[in-house]
Length: 339
Image (cartoon, rainbow, N blue to C red; front, side, top):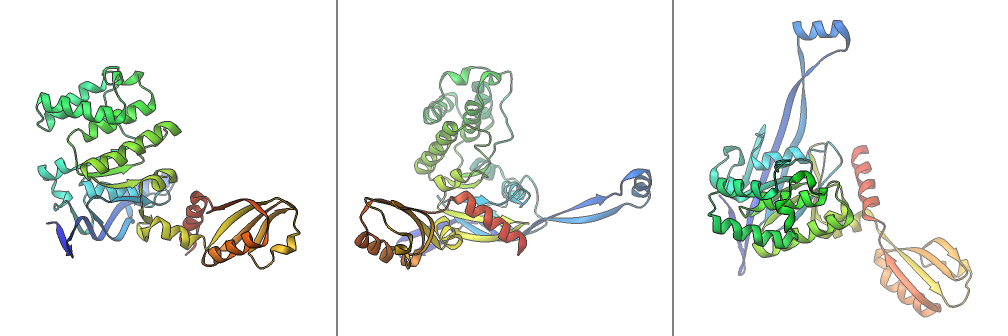
């Protein structure tokens, strides 16, 4: 059952609880060639692949959590276990108070798994036909189904697209129709696996805006896996970093950025020329001209150094920035692999 904690007057519900979750597969190991095939038939050898190793995390109601890691890290396997599509080898999982592996009807009404590389829409039929079928499966009346289709369609900016054959829709339009079909039963827990895969920039932005609105309106809890860091930075304040089936980081995206980059970049333009050695003591000068300097300054010293720069130089423009998050995360993945 769900875990409810009371802190003062604030009620905090743990909606997803994962304890020591593991998943391993036994696969056949075969040598190449005819001899290897014969040996494989006579004396088959197998090896165990650990896709997920002892995962532990909790997600509270209404959170949007990023689930990131390199290819083969165990993200999709974990999402499928949380949905009950595959059974864990060991550990305990509760999602919305239910054990996913039991596939309880009430549990299935609470969740949705949306995978960017999979589709449920029928290629030669318009999306509205699939929506009507889904409404019947979930026991929605015609009036309620029409109301939800209209409500979600407006949020997703889908109108006449719902009555055109799926094959005539753009990739972005199909993805939005997939979202509508998956959310027609109004699930409170969303598992998203690459929901913006292959979409152009504008379509990605519209999908993100929709997910933010859905979370606000219905209080949905969202676990989002994506290789597009723009999805993560736009939607998630908290991230889980997984690799080789193990959680390496669980915390805020801001704290992870601070951990990965102890420096901030400062670009400064001046109204008169200065010598490079005049910036000694402010930080590492990585780019310089008479009227411009780019300096790396320690985060802990940023405020005081900026004050000194503004006081000591004729500054006409100043920009403070972090390194690109994609670059930081990429370096973090490399750090994990060599650890």
